[in-house]
Image (cartoon, rainbow, N blue to C red; front, side, top):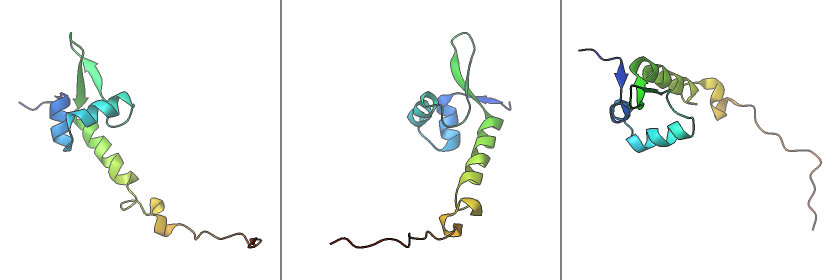
Length: 86
């Protein structure tokens, strides 16, 4: 059977994280998207949403995205009017 949804523990294992991390992220409104499903309102994650979230993280990573890499940034220039006050 090919499943489209995962519970918290399964999603955490899928991402290589602890269930506690997913819990904290959910309450901070961070991390992969989730929703409540069923009569008990269990927290559920779509596998395709987890995969999309992983791709977003790869793109946001400075090593993967040269635009975010601090080495690519223009050098910081000091103000010319600095003076030592002694």
